[in-house]
Length: 277
Image 1: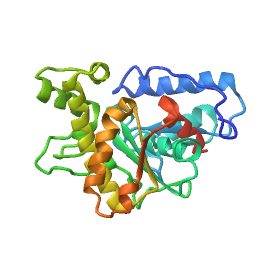
Image 2 (image 1 turned 180 degrees about the vertical axis):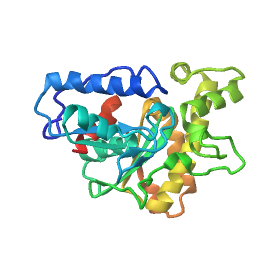
Image 3 (image 1 turned 120 degrees about the horizontal axis):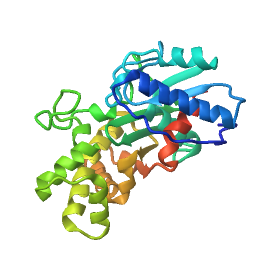
Image 4 (image 1 turned 120 degrees about the vertical axis):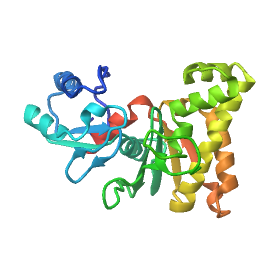
């Protein structure tokens, strides 16, 4: 990025979730390809899933790409390329990008939620990421919405993530349809008017709405931006989410809180990582 504008972009597969050498090698390959397109780089921003020790720049517990856990990715990149590098959570990056360049532009307090394999979150106030004391502010996916509910990948029960991430939606689909189905097929079925598929998205939206109500009651943001692959379902999930949110929010004034889909697409996290510099 240059002057908050994209000058080049590239997408390559991770190839492994558990092998540190392969993952880091792919990251290096991506950086090398971008350096060939633009050699005048002031810094490198990296967005990763899961919590990051922002002060020490260590990846703490990545939920999917476990091969990155605890490694000094910043140090490895800086040693190889001699370029200043900053590591941050991917949904922090997404929220920053949407605040500065996307759906949250001009807003004072923006909450971002990323829906995909997991559920992450970010908080931006006055164009700056809020980290909290230990850097974990914004982990929206692990608020409890039912303490006796589904088992979450984190080990707890009833987390929001267990209902609105990809695996959770597939589980809801199995409960309603009686068969296993992926979210892309489910989306296409709903778009064609399949009532059961629409019901699954609406049910998922209700769970999301409970989480949104908790966020609004706790933080009272200007806007909540929903991104990630699951957000591509659009109004199929957001209509019921907003309805459930407004039903559960305490303050009549806060019921007007805007909830909209992210605008910057699949590269939003990468854009936000660039904006860290």
